[in-house]
Each structure stands twice: as C-alpha cells, then as structure tokens.
Image (cartoon, rainbow, N blue to C red; front, top):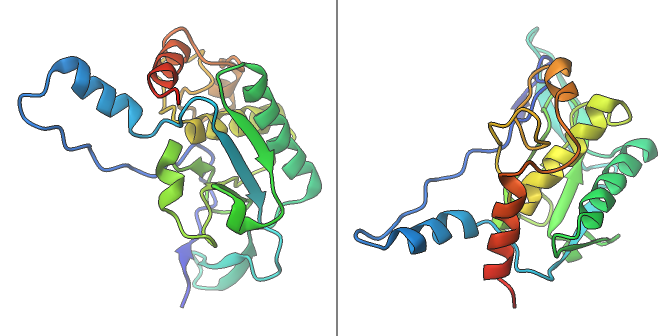
Length: 207
C-alpha cells in the first residue's frame, strides 16, 4: 500500500499543523502568553543534533495521479546536505543561544532531515521534533536547495525547528511564500518581530 499521494506542485512550506494549547481558565495574560510562545522553544544553550537519512531503505512509497506508485528516497545528494549545513551555520552565527551538531547515528539526533521529492518542504516546530520516532523525518526538503529559492527554504525550515512559526512580515525569512517572487522579498534573517520574541523566550528558558 502506498504511504503518500505525490504532490508534484507543492513548492511552498507545508509545516505540520500543531494542536492548539490548552490554557487554564483565568490564567494571567503574561503566563498564558509564555505558554503559547515557549511550548516549542528550546532552552538557551541547547545543542541540537541533526542527522541526514543515509540508508537505502530510508524513503516512502508515493502514489501518482495516474495510479502508479514509486519508492522515493529520503537520502539527499551531498550538495543538498551542504545547503542544510550552511543553513544551520547561518542561524548559529546569529548568536541566538543554540548550537547545532551533525551526527551519524540517527538515535542521537533530535532533528532528522529527509530530501523526499513530491512531499514539499516542512519541519516540525521546535521541540515538537522530540515527539517523532527515531526513523521518522522531522524535516523534509522537496526541491533543489542550491538555488536562491532553495537556500532561503533551508533557512526557513530550520527556523521552524528553532521554534519560529510562519511570520506575516514578507521581508522576514520566516514569512510564508508560495512563489519565487515571494522568496525574493525575504531577507536571510528574522524580522524585528520574530527575533526579539525568540530571544525573549530563550532568556525565560535559560538553564
């Protein structure tokens, strides 16, 4: 049986939907806001380990519109992996209090990166990655990351892994884009709304 239906037109962020948090009735606004902002955030100083799928059996079967099925690998080419590594380095250089380390053993990784075509590009939000199985993707890239569009996609999805949601500011790297033109409007960093929010939350979560 096929696992997924192929979506050949999916060229935008398809971040998985999160359930709404349950806020106790009567809770003060500041505390309620901290729950909403902090539930996906990593503690300041966390080392996040990431792994690229590397086995022949890593992948999934997809069903196409004509009824045919095909196994599609999650394993990425070296150039695609390098683009993701560069994305992690870019976020590290921003000095937001998180470190990133690539590991060869998926059991040691909080973040597991796949490169499955026809499945869009997406990432679970922040610490939601911890709820996924050891052999499951927590992040996927569904198109070439060596272009300007692709490099910005890598930064955007890693931003989701840091805990940042989609942003309405079209100049922010975390803004939702469904076209090359939309990507061209983005910078390669957080906007004035996202970065202070993340920094404030990380300070609250400092260990």
